[in-house]
Image (tube, rainbow, N blue to C red):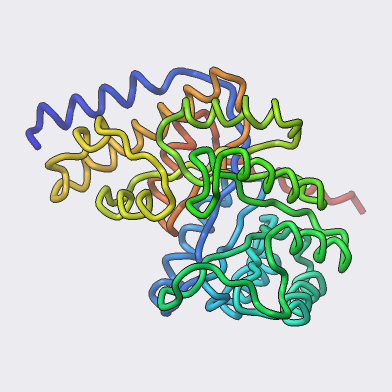
Length: 312
């Protein structure tokens, strides 16, 4: 991309960044699988900790494949940071006794917030099959967690319908079951068309759902990968976005500027409709998420003044 085009991207981002009242945010990370990835994760956590998010969540791999790494990450967050950690927990590939044991481990480690999900099967398994002795769906998992302890529980919602759902109505019925079972809030799958989220809120309201439904925001660090994610989860990738990112594969600086512009604009459009909370899928890369949050008015918390010692 030419220098003039790069400057245009900067100007567009500045236009998007008008003063607003800062929203509430939360961040999602995934557990590291290598020492290098662990270093990257903790750099991201420390960078975003300064923005005082409501909570940060750590994902759980398909089939529960990252159980130990997820537990290690949320426990370390609890012990070494000021953040409120939330651990993902799924139904896939485990009995109720195994899932309950993990939940008790979390509670005993001081983890009070669970993101309860049905979960995806491992890559080599076709279609979701509940464990014969397991929780059959996320609503059952929520109810089971509430029997164990008074967890705060977040669940998933799908503005553009879960790929396995028979219809939008069935999808909403499932969301209502999860909330009625004891979930506190829903966090949506990412989306790029803000109107799809707003339509979903209207449908949820008509279905009698009054719990908070927090929009999930995916900053685009790699357009091809984001497109692949969207195809797997049924999210629409607008053509105008493909046009924006076209030709930027080798231009990381401009690509980041465009990505920040797109995400900030998406959030601002939602703020104009009264949305006050956002959940960011960080992909363990803090820089872009941090920039977007600053564009939305978030600032680092002021350090507390040093304590004054009493005389004598």
